[in-house]
Length: 371
Image (cartoon, rainbow, N blue to C red):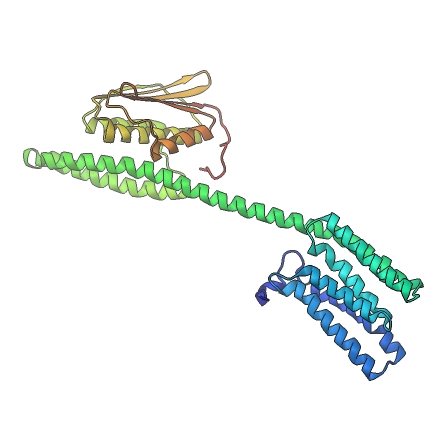
């Protein structure tokens, strides 16, 4: 038998310190011995019964996995054994009925058990020719107490389910936040490192021919690195984008640095912050893929408003891409669909990404995606 840590027993959210208050009712067991001035032998028997009861009673609260119904049956047995010579033994029936609803998993099981306890008390009272108040406290009163506790036991079960659901929601929120950070770091660092590589290669080629321009490229690498550090910090905090217009300008500069001719067709579209952030990350990821994998000569960036939606297209004339989606594209699709938008990819001749998101303010469809 394994005991619960002592510092947690009376911090239980279902009962707290209540067991220490409930046990005071055991005092009724000693009323008759006090009034009848029973012998020392009878006192010792009563004290033994009380000690056994305390083990059964507190075992329900301090054991990690108590055999609850065995404890309840033990209390019933004490009542049956002591009832013939101590009328206060009906206290054991009352405790058994009071504890039973908290030891079973349904109201039906609770009521069935209470009927069994009441019937046991009534049958014993019949054979012992017990009537009046002793019959009431042995058979009917335990059922009344147990029926009342059935409501509280059901409430405790619902509260436990609610706490479990809240714990699961909290866990899922943490997982979603980790996934968001992973997606955003992939997009931020993937793009930035690609630009650093391009500019470093360009500086290396220019080192002998044009040292001054090579120095300018190295200084740009330093600026981009500092900017990347700031973006990583912003990503962890959950707000990153400097705006779609700035991201498109940065994309144009990155493509030109990579030797890709850019066709820029961007209308001015006013977007809520969340949509603008998602489209900015989409532009960054798409341009990174063009620079890394497409081997394209031209790339078209198109932004326009269509019937209450914002349409963004990034199209290149490169080698196309595989049918499988990588982490970056998968993260991009998840963000867009959270906003009720769509993302399509056509890689038959080059690659074309087309993204549509609603212009109006929307609530993300997934937990854990916040800005």
